Amino acid sequence: MGYEEFDCTSFEFCHLSHRTLSTPAAQYALVFLPGLIAGRLLDLGHFRLPFLFGSILVVISSVITAECKKYWHFLLCQGILTGIGSGICFGPTLGIVGHWFLVKRGLALGMVAVGSSIGGTIYPIAARQLMPLIGFSWTMRVMALISMVMLSISNATLKPRLPPKDVPGGLFNLRVFRSPAFTIYCFATLVAFLGIYTVLTYINTSAVLVGVSPDFAFYLVSIANASSGPGRIATGIVADKLGPVNVMVPMTLASAMMTFAWPYAHTKGSLIVVAILYGFTSSSFVSAFNMPVFALGEMSDVGRRLGTVMMFTAVVALCGPPISGAIFRTTGGFNAVSYYAGSVIVVATILMSTTRYLILRRFWGKF
Image (cartoon, rainbow, N blue to C red; front, side, top):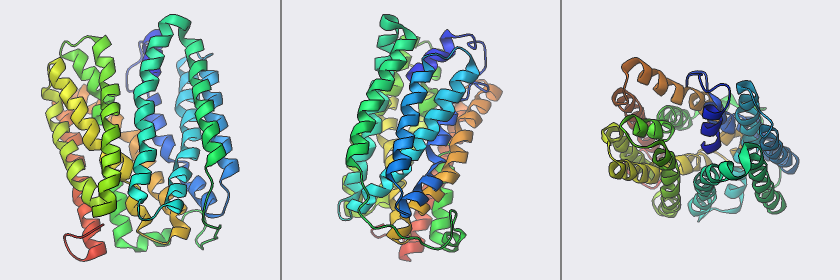
């Protein structure tokens, strides 16, 4: 979000409200939304061309962003094009990792998820440091070059292991909802994403409101992203031993507690502690929410199931941060925002626990 914040403060739309400036929310949603189509194509054996198309879209959108001047330009390039391109690449990548790993699947997916922690830490800081030196346009071109190099490696190395299989049901298989466990788990992810991004979206704003300098507040999100890296790896390792839901429930519950505590952090030290602990605990759900989907059906249909979960997630990811913003504008503070976000996260942990019970028919066991 580093250069998006720069956009909003350095161009002609700096007077617009956060209700209007919805580029990050669009990205959140569109990273998940294409998963339904891309996941189904993966099941049918079509991976390379869609992945290449998504990669090109990500790079081109960053190059075009360098020429943007108006708000709708940024919304189109950074919000829609980058979101769609990332979404086309994101879902199938998770499915392919599931193809290649079984015993150590959690660790493998955790290692993949660390990439977003590294990117979420480095990209904003790099952009912020480069802009005063080479300007916004060349900064975006540098970002595009980095993306092109990284995505070239992905295109050269990723490939499915399992043969294509046309599982009946079309693009959207309603029969998966005959499984109460799958249905409840879909609701769990849906509810969780209503609140899980709230702290990361607004912690810098809340810091400025309590007197912390904007220059320092900017780095809080990067601190949270950096601390999420160890959390994602730890989640993967423990998930292989205990099951992903058994890891996500306590860690996600801890992130809810940090959400409740966040508005009461009024110093640099306390804000850093909140950023570190929230980044570490919330990373468990963000990196592992897809893992139970592998166990909720056949591997031949995993792409479509992942896509189905992501489709519902996309709608909620688009709504979650704006809902929190609306609560902030109504109440004039972040206390009510934290109560809302923390509460929905707690509800999500209850639904995840319910999914475990429906699968195992007991309250505890590996899942």
